[in-house]
Length: 489
Image (tube, rainbow, N blue to C red; front, side, top):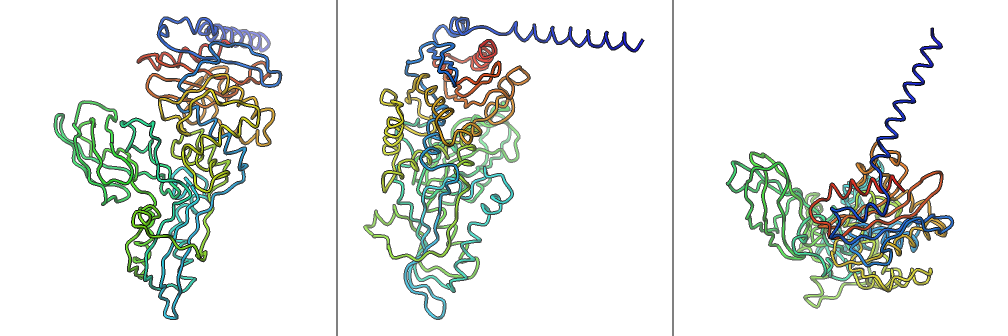
C-alpha cells in the first residue's frame, strides 16, 4: 500500500510540475515577438545577448542604436571607478587646523574640514554595525581630536574645504522638475548625510493646503514657498524645486488627505556649509566657543580669501571600501553616490574634478582598454539626464570585459543586484526559473525602461542589454513583456 502511495505522490508531483512548467513557458516569447508587440509599436528598442566566454551573439536588435539608458549608466560609472581605484580604496576626509594653540587652549586660527569627495559621510545607506557606528561618530570623533589637541576656544572659523570638486554640483542637462529633490542632490567635494533632508507635512481635508511641520535635520536656512494641495490620493505626488546654494525651495504637487506627518525628501542646498555649521554647533555645545561664522572654499573664493595651506591634521576619517560604495550605487540605484564616483574618476587625472573631466576620464580609460565610447553621449554618472545616449553593444562589451579581463571581476559582479531578491529588481522575474540567476542593473525614467547585466541559462553565462525608449504610459506591461522575453531566451 505504501509503495502505491509513493508512486501516486511522485506522479502527482510530476504532473503539477509539468503544469507549472507548461504555464511558465506559455508566458514566454522570443526577441522577435517582443519587438513586434503592438504595445511597442512606437517604441525605440535595442537588445543584445552575448555569451561571455565565446563572444557568440545569441540575439541582437538595434544593438548600435543610441538610446537613453537611465540608471543602467551607473554600470559604466561604477566599473570605471572600480578599475581605477580597486575595491579596497577608501576616501579620506581630514580635520585640520591652522594657526597656533596658546597655552590657555585658544586656537588663534581656523579649523578645516578637507573633503576628498566621499559620498558616504553620514550616509544612512551604510548598513554594517561597525560602519554604522563610524558614520554616527564623525562629529564625535572630530570633538575627541580637538580636545586631544588641547583646543578650548577658536578665534577663527570652521571652514569646509570642498575644493577637490568644482562648484557645478548638478549636471546642466538635468531637468528642472528633478532639481531640489533628494534623488537629484548635488555632488560636492564635501557631502554630508546624503545631502538630504526630510520635510514633514500635516494635511487636512481635500482641497486644503498642507501645513509644514518641520525638517529633519533642521534646515533654518531654507525658505519654503508652499504651493501644495491636499487631494484624494494615497500616493506621493509632491515635489521640491530649487537650485544649489540658494535658500528658496518651491513646493508643488499634491499630498494625501488627513496625514499627521507626511514626509517628502529634498536636497541640502549647500552641503559643505551645512557640515561646517554642524561642527561649529557641536563645538559650542561642548563649551568650545568659535568667534567666526562657518565658511567654505566657495564662499572664501567669492570674497577673494585664499585658504591657508600649512595645515596640521587632527583626525582622518575614511569611507567604507569602494566595493561597498559601488554595490550600494548599483543595488539601490543611488544617484548621489554615482555622481561622486564620476568626479572621483576625474581626480585620478586632474587636481580638481568636474562632470566634464569625469566624462573625459571615463572615455579615455576605456579607449585604452579597447572599448570605444566616442560615439555615445554622457552628461552625468547616474543616468538621470534624459539626453544621455548609449548603445546596447557598448554596454555588453563593457560587461564582457569586466567578466573576462577585469582583476576585480568578482567585486563588480556582486555589485549588481539579484533579480527577484534585492534592490530595484527585487520584483523582477520573481518566482520564475530565472529568480536569483540574473545579476543586473535596471534603469527607468519617463518613457524609458532598461536592463543590463548577466544571466545564467543552461550552465552558461551571458551578458545582455535591453533598452526600451518612448513606450508611452504602460511601464508595468513593458516590464512584464521583458520578463517573458528573458524567460524565452
